[in-house]
Image 1 (cartoon, rainbow, N blue to C red):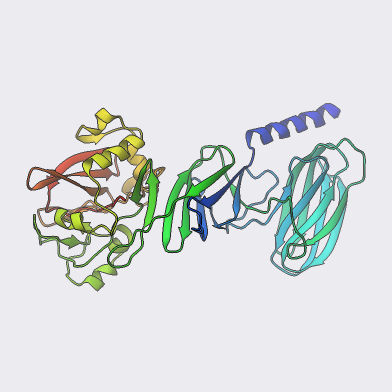
Image 2 (cartoon, rainbow, N blue to C red):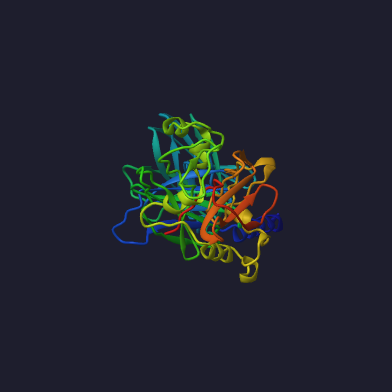
Length: 417
């Protein structure tokens, strides 16, 4: 029997070593710039959690913690493992009787405690009788939670459960009351940090405890619309397509010299009507090259062909590859594409935070094409008088295409600072 217990303990400890919790938090890089909130989403599971500026987030494989899809933190035991003394913290949504029970690995009841409690977060001190695996169950009107904990206590005492009070009446000086997210090594987190009207995107796959220092930069177009930004390498990019729309034209209108603005699928001229369309709200505006050159917000500009190459090299493309034309690289396109919205499951992983969308384009034969299949973005670099360089991503490959076309086509725009 002792060998069986020892084997169970070894297995449990092995799991802990493999799946140590990771704590992450966020701080402003520039002092005096507060972080109002951060939304963190695990792109594998879809779980999303909102943090305040000072919150920490525990990334865990759920040892000792129950998780719910609403992104809240209903409870945890800390520390875990411990030396025989631990704290249980959980949230109750209703008024009523709450029972806390401790069981050993054989299912024997060692201790129980019953309290009539109000809604809120509550804390209990737990005293375990010795080394081993224990299960702590909480029975509430709004459900049951069970926590697993490992205790390394060289003692032989009775198990006890002592109510410690609610969050409003007790200070958890050593507690990890941070919110929690299910996480496996290699999972990619999409983090959206907000400060006033400014939003910065980070994409991270942490392997250890981390504090992320966030830079914020204003990106506001002439219509007073604010844009999310993302830092890729040493460059600051817009993390969404430009949607500045001072006028709108049907696809039948084209020009190599006069600025023109299009919404894919919209063939009217009314700006207010154009802004109500789904394509405007999701994919932004398609610009001919003269419009693209002057559409970026103050302090931002249309990226050159060389700046796109810097982005591509940051994502792993070689300098020689960036100089070629056509489809180049390996998985760099996948790193730029959004995780949804592309036809035939041609989505990306968006590991760069660029959030490239398949907005299609306006061709110089007066028609719109490839909505849901491809995304096209201008560069500021000429190629002969009437042509310019551009990039495009496709639903059916993972590369980035570099080539040229006529300046009267309508493409999406991303600006750089």
